[in-house]
Image (tube, rainbow, N blue to C red; front, side, top):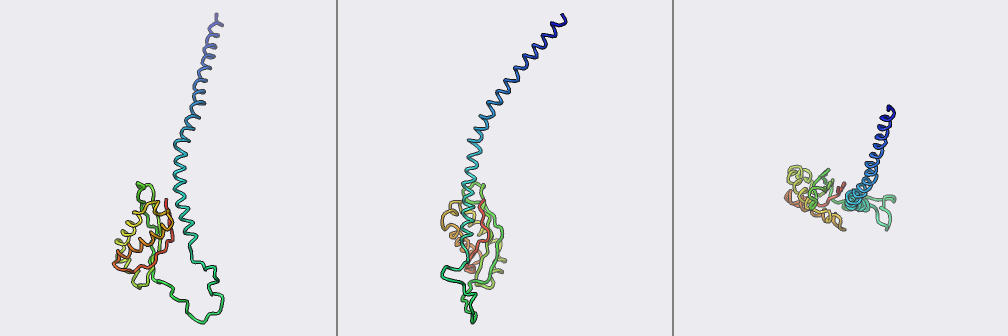
Amino acid sequence: MATEPDVEPKQSKGGKRGLPLVPLLIVVLVVPVVTLALTEFVIIPRLQSSLGSGDSASHGKSEQGSSGGGHSSSGGGGHGSSHDGGDHGDLGPQNTYEFKDVICNLSGTMGTRFLKVSFEVAGSDPDLSSMIRMKRPRVKDAIITTLSSRTIQDLEVPGGRNALRVALITAINQAIGFEAVEELFFTDFIVQ
């Protein structure tokens, strides 16, 4: 009789071996379905939206890199030949002031997208830098107001950056009280 009770526990252990198959089958079947659903409905839409908006930043970089101060195809700049004097002509405004890392949220993004720009303004007035320094809070407010009123679509359209350039020049001139700023050069332009 001692052997009979030993047999029964072995059978009950054998019966327990079948139970781990149920959770294993559930895991094997449910995990791929959940993974597929998360990939299809969460991960891929997020990637598409970030890649779709990432095009604006790369588009901006290509515009910035393609513009420049190269010589035209009509010839060289005249630097290699003999030159009699200083008749280079008007070099444009010589007085500058630099704004570094101006950051603001873009309009229509509910605070999820921002614009970071650095730029330099130039004008022929010798007091340009001192005027901007004296009214820096007012000028900075005008710049941030102008930048934050733009949408991503405003910046993506052809000529959008030039329209922003003109709007910034106008805003800065209004903030300092007269037309001192004549040119604006973007040195950094990032949409994130």
